[in-house]
Length: 437
Image (cartoon, rainbow, N blue to C red):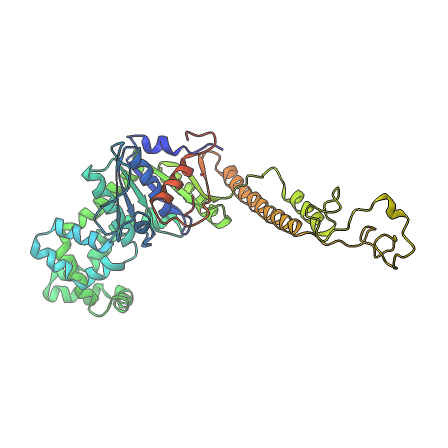
């Protein structure tokens, strides 16, 4: 299994965009932030663009909030000449910026106030992903940043992230919307005849849209299209340009996953889809891998030792380490009991005598040791399961480099935690120099 070397990737000046993608809850946001701070402290001017609405990224970086404008992160070591900025996508604001930059003030205001536009920009299917790609294109075109790290939204499928920009661009620039809104351009009685004759086949669909978006949808759409008519071509052009940017050699995709069946199944699908679309895959980040400093002690041996401590004591030390709850050692004179010894005395060899095979009580030390051994056995079972999951993925995709990142004992809530993750991310056995999400 090839090793994913993170430092050479983020140090390479040819790497301009790193896209972290994967299922929800696997640590994409934290991985993106850790990559950003590590790259910045190694001398690159970095911006991290998060599309996930979670606020943990801002909190970890010591920012009160993130918005559509890159904010510089304080506390980053800039001795190597790097900087770190962070921002959170505001999809409506990004859409507004496109309108404002491609229309005169009067037309821009007409578009921004249009009810159909407001519904489209606030939550139409695919808008978030499309605007993420718009923002990525803006950041890359400005040439201000050495490296852009993108934290993608949690999607059930890679299709959402890769296809939504094209779908929305095709919708805004497609024949369907032009046919649907042709009456606005024809006007008067000709338009009315068109509605009566040509719209009958679409009445069911427009009725559904009216229910979803409110009454007067067709009129709002007509006004929207009339105002944006000169801009439609630009949506598909920009979507296509950004798609090509994602395929360019300067882009690197990192698929982030946890060592769990569902997450790795999703990761395998991402890998296959990226390959089918000729997207440059750098490798897999396998988060929250568990380890043990006593991995040489198997689960079976640990459980056997725990049972021995709990049931019989330490076999070659009958009195135990602490002496409490254990039988006393017998001396040679104990073989001849005195005439005054009472029945059942420990020295008379009766079945009740604890030195002659009767049950013994484990000491406190032995009980604690047995508990620790059982915890170790559980940890070894977890390790074995995670390695089986990893090996199954590697068998299906032997060409994909993997970075295994050790789980941290707690949540990440500051820059030091992000640095620790970055160090684990880069410290791969056999690599150049493993994170919890």
